[in-house]
Amino acid sequence: MNKSFSIEVARLDGYLGGMAELSGRIREYSAFSYVIAMNNECTHVSELLVKHYSHCSPDAQLVFSGEIKIVNGVAGLEVELRDFLIRGFLDASKHFPSETIEDRKKYLSFRVMDVLSSLVGMEGPSSDVFKLECEASGVQCVFFCILLKGQILVLQFNDNAGWLQHVSEAE
Figure 1 (spheres, rainbow, N blue to C red):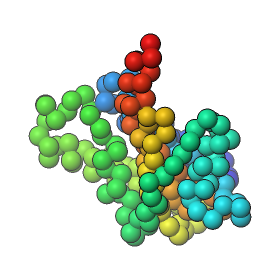
Figure 2: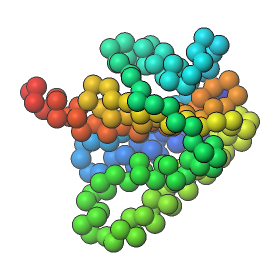
Figure 3: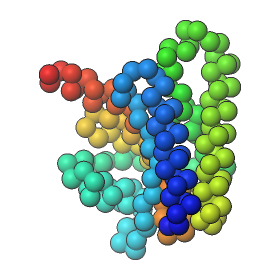
């Protein structure tokens, strides 16, 4: 992975993380971008994610409800991302018409796609994009995995409400 690619992935990670925090409720949502190296041992994206998380967090148990191939690859990702970019934005639905919120989602997904286009261009054409969903420790996770040459670019969106409720009940 070259340095420019790493910098752009980190920039996208910060952008997604910032948007996730716009709900105004601390840690309710989180979002990340990162890269996982592909290997010959794992044949499915879900296997690579499980292996990745077993190294990062040995207690995490990822069980995916399915692995969906996104139609049209990276081009089909723009519409899929919209619902994850603005979630509960400071209760915007109480203050703005739904059309305004949808327009903002379209704009933000366009901005994410702009960065993704640059990243895909650096690493060669993407063959496939997969969407995976799971629940781990009360956190609802959605992963968008973009297959590149020898690696997977992952966009991860978490709804942490279940985990936060569990933590507050334990206190």
